[in-house]
Amino acid sequence: MNFLGTLASRTLGSLALLIVVPTITFFIQGLSPSNVVKGLLGLDATPAQIADLNHRLGLDQPLMLRYARWLANAATGDLGTSYTNHQSVQQILAPRLSVSLSLILGALAVFTIAGVVVGVMSATQGRVVGRVLDVVSTIGVAAPNFWLAVILIALFGVALPIFPATGYVFFSDSPRLWLLSLVLPVVALAFAGITAVAKQTRDQMMLAIHSPWARTLRANGASEVSIVYKHALRNAAAPVITIAGTIFVGALSGSVVIENIFVLPGLGSQSLASALQADLPVVQGIAVYFTIIVVVVNVVIDIAAAILNPKVR
Image (tube, rainbow, N blue to C red; front, side, top):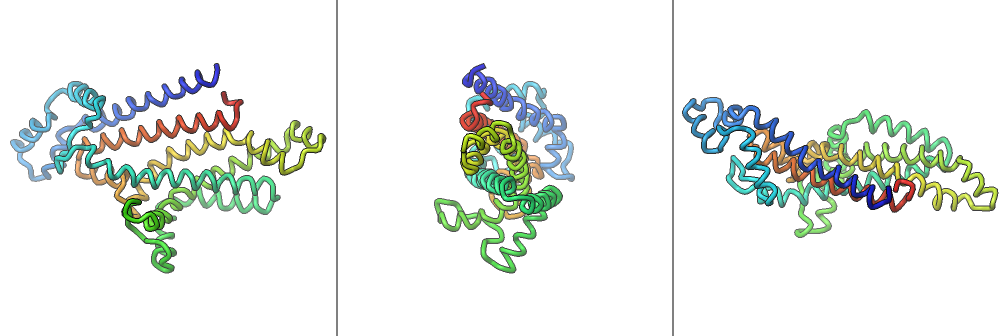
């Protein structure tokens, strides 16, 4: 199959997520409408109040009918209205989307670039760097991101107040303060990814550097720098980019915790608040937004992997 055919099939698979994930979310939430109404009214609500709100929200209608109506509206860009503040879901989520994108795309850039640099160093600079990477990788896997977030706040937000401990500044208000407000949350979210990408890069680089074709290049007079950076790194690119995409999906769930710890007004913090308030349309809208992000990033990763290593085509 040619590159365009492969890309088309992968894109269609990714687009299927746009239906599957929101559908699963909708049905999980819709199984207990009475619990939703009780969450909105409180435990002291009377049966008459519960029945009235059920009717006004349309929760007394069959689940499949509600789903069909939601799907038809979502196809036109209408994700519904919040149960709690009666704003459209788009109005609530649009300003928060830029915050989450700044965090998760920043983390993606950091753990990919830093991981590749550390991995190449580990593969070319001997055993000492490799052993240090193994130790740090163990810490990165064992230490949850919320623990690292608290440590970073204590060290660089309180003891040495170099960066803001919490809060967020929008880029339009101050590019400099926007960048400073992202440093600690991005590092906390990216740390485990750095170690994973570094280990994958090291392993792939070691395979390439000691492969028969690399020995042939050396015998023909190619420099070690050329072998490492022109050939080996290019061969290692596709699997490294693929694992970076996998880590990115995990970072999306991690962003919920990080946004709440650093008090960032993003989709992650809103998802927790809306879930606690039983605001189903907003939770459903966030599921759609997150799924779109995953689909777009997966397509970009497939294209990048094909460009860097034609063998994946």
